[in-house]
Length: 130
Image (cartoon, rainbow, N blue to C red; front, side, top):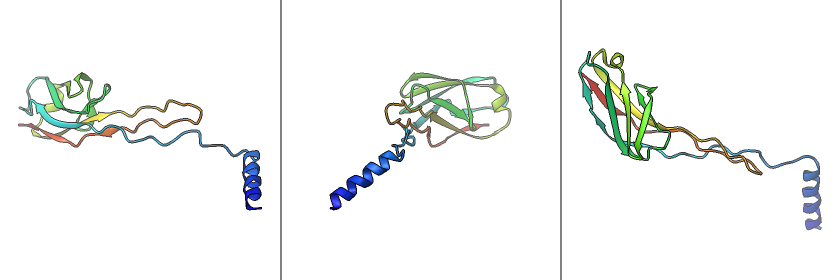
């Protein structure tokens, strides 16, 4: 009797328009890690320079963030990125946080949908402007 009740409830649920969720929440992405900034200091008033970020887990579309602002980034390898830091970013002495973000990916769809990956950002490393 219990089996019949369960079957009837299941059929009633399906007949009432119940369907599986269309998409899943994004899954965690790969967290990049910074090991070294080259150079790690500059003098205020210096001209623009190329910042090299060495580390690991840099995705194909990873971005260097200078003081929270994404910079145009070139991926050299999965462990090295470069970006040109403009002279206007080093006009005053101070400590500047540098991070790397692996942007999230969109879901691929499919019969039940599928979540992509969330954006992940490294811990900051400090760049010094003298």
